[in-house]
Length: 338
Image (cartoon, rainbow, N blue to C red; front, side, top):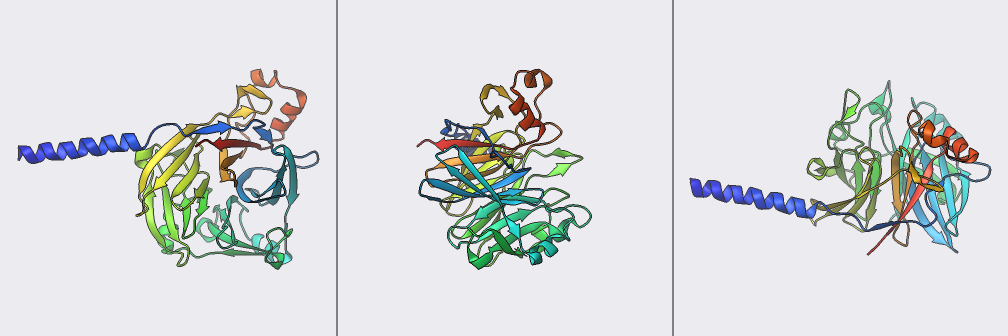
């Protein structure tokens, strides 16, 4: 009996040691030279941006789509790393009528499926009909061209089993993490909330793309990930994400059985553009990767806590103060170092 107990203790010890060795260490990231930057142009800016997805690079320009959680979608272009262009997309009359029924057009993550050409948007549910509207929606552009300016279809996809898909959602809490691989959709729940406080962990559903069925449920309980507010899938088994509440970028590596094999982290800081010596309360809520292994993250300004303290604001120029007071989002860029 004692031998069995010792053997069990050794298994537990080495299992715990493996977890410590495989779920720690800093990610090899380097902040972009010209970043962070205000997500604006001379005459326009996004508002409450909570989703970003990379489309392609063409003639030196990088093309993205953005989602605001107030119901706007944008085409975003970066030229020469610093020149921004923003174009607000238009909803057809049919789509406008459909969205008019939503308690809130609470768009969160947006993702481009490079394998199929599909565009998906995650929408959170809000009172009074949370479960009716929360979900993953597929967008169609006019002439099936995602470089067109008009969205002609906004269709909810059915994820099964529905009872499990809806089990953890709540008012203003849904799948803020949305990523896609060749075979799967990855749905990251923002978190479990109890009396306005988030718990110490959350979940990721793995959904088979063809059947739209949940085939795996991953818990972050053992990996120090409290919230998931953005996801991106690199290859078939690597998930990049944002834990907003812990101000971390994380990278999850999955094995062939879609179990978590390794997790690493990078501590982020809310840096004020042109004032790298000052920090602010950044609410990072979206992540994507371009064709050169650079990550782009966007913050969704919390209007109660986004503006820096008065002692900091006094040391900022007038334009920077105005940008904060207008709650203009900030975009970050990190290069993945091999």
